Length: 511
Image 1 (cartoon, rainbow, N blue to C red):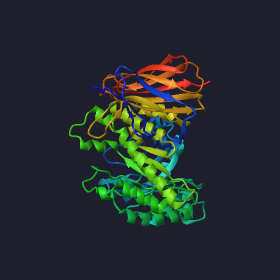
Image 2: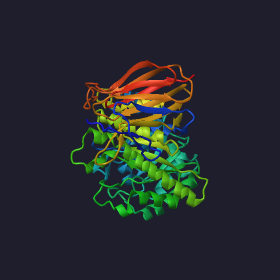
Image 3: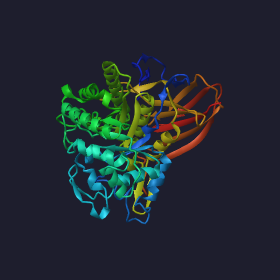
Image 4: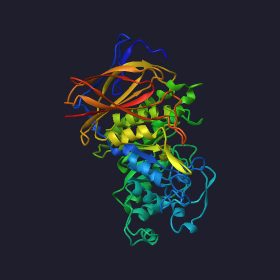
């Protein structure tokens, strides 16, 4: 790969500034413990479950009561263990496109009496064996909060409010008593409720215009709050972008949708959701290569930065003290090669970098982190970077300065080869630095300047990479994992060479 001969300031908080440097000069990272962004909400390490016909996301992986490897609830034990290890704090369910045709009442009560229904979103039978009670039980077993998305497609506001009553109301009313009858007298206290899924998508059952959606969602929010005023509501933000569908209208596109939802519903909601599968942007390139996939972190940055501006606009217009945040509750790092772990890391870096506005995120799907077979389990290539972030990057996000070489492609200009975040984790007494090297073939020599704080003069270095960009994990072979080592340094200066196509996380103890 030919590297450009100019270094550029890779700051995503301001305009990219050009500056000439000799090609042999090291890249530079500056970290000041006093330059904080905000506390990181652990919910950015959430995930997502949806019953699908094509992939065993729920049935046959998570929920498999016929397996000898399952517990008394029908959940695969190794699945539960891996999710606990990852410390996934919240799980969104049941959709996804599925929910826009789902009747939640089909999934409660005695299992032998639950109807097998046609999942019209994917034309497959849905057994309804994992319903609301089973989902809540699963979350309890792995220590995750509940996040239920209502049916804003074929569903009604009564369906939505009745679901809240079933989950959260004390016994004494019809749906709460039904919950008790089915074995759960105590309320589930589900706090997070999504007001529908991808309502702007023409592929969705009950697809709506922005005006139709606001009318429905505003009324649903009202009656749901009548049942439980303490719930937090997530509006259905954008999911339809250029190249996603042929019917995309740039004059009434994703920005217009989010702007309208925020303008009309600002006081009614606590989050606006963003859904983005960044690899959709590669449709603009005839034959995308590794470098094109590695540039997609900038796509995620754009969606966050633009939506943050729309939130600020809506708040000012409403003259409100109320805060609305981003819930990036569907995103994917497709593929089990090294591109997947590095793209996942770029997403998590973006959420950390924008910790002041991104307060929840849910990876599609939970099973992309857990490798489950009929007779055992393995760790996917995504497991390892997710584990490093979810276990260590809790605390305060820092405003990092970085300067490095860049490249350009058909999608973006001046893509920095290094994608960098830093987190001060006071509970662990350490600074964590996360660096993705987007280069396929070149290690990048870098000076890290710790501008404030006192350190022990040593660091643990954990690296996720592979011998090639085709490295992968399966039940038979593991080519992607965490390589751990240590380094010494003096006077708050570190010189380190970040390997090609890698994620590196440095843990630096703070005095």
